[in-house]
Amino acid sequence: MKAIVINTYGNEDALNYVDVDRPEPKADEVLVKVHAAAVNPADWKIRNGMGEQFGFKLPLILGGDIAGTVEAIGDGVESFKQGDAVYGITLAHLSGGYAEYAVAKAEAIAPKPESITFEAAAAIPIAALTAWQAMFDLAHLSSGQKILITGASGGVGSMAVQLAKAKGAIVVGTASGRNEQFVRDLGADDFVDYTQQPFEAVVKDMDVVFDTIGGDTSAQAFQTLKRGGFLVAAPEPPSEEKARQFGVEAAWVYCQPSAQQLVKINRLIEEGKLKIHIETVLPLSEVKKAHQLSQSGRTRGKIVLQARA
Image (cartoon, rainbow, N blue to C red):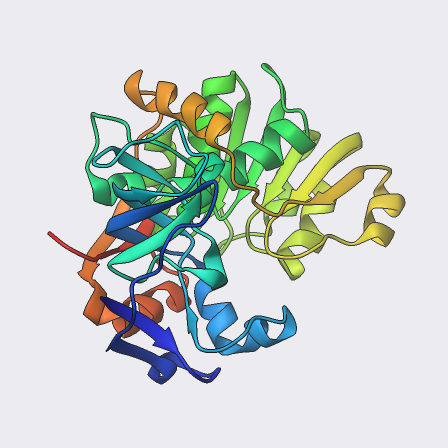
């Protein structure tokens, strides 16, 4: 099968479009014929060397998000059969989605929503589950609460805005000015162009902050919370010192595969409450361009690789 393999860590030139052996599912696993796979910032961070820090073994096939059809099932799998249309999260560094076939745990995939394409489905799992787990499992966001979402036009941020609105929250989103209408169309009640003014100067008394940017943005976001509020950060663990200083709670969200949560997300998709926004779809062979686009930090929604038409 064709796959994108990295044999050394480095820039996008480390990505090789080559032939490799097809993986086989073990017990409780499913082999998926990949139609589409999404690109996430974690992919190029791993490629740049984070994979070595995590102890991943080379050669490595990147890609956590996939959508496709079940090709084969391992022992003990009763929830799927060959030919089922599915989407979810792969075994990551053991069998990544940048390939024509990938392996996933049965509990990490769910039936693909019938109303959307494979490309749209591939854009959902990690972004939507990260947002869901950050806002609902960790911060316990509830109807009527106020939430600030940084990077609201990105892959995770755009999901978060819609999920928060579906929950009944009051949403403030930050992004560059060119994305204001996009973020408002997602459902944001208010918008701050971070390039024109410090968002922490105008946003106050938030119950929850979901920071998808990290770094200085995370540090500044503490200032927007009311005492007793909750900050959840996606890129890196937030400052415990800052949390104590401002009298708030803070946590780091690390996406966990969950078929049960994907089924709940499916319902929102079918009800029209969650729409998928794709910046571009590229063939698997153009993965280098996809990584360059993702690293630019200027995309709306997700970048998707197409393993087959």
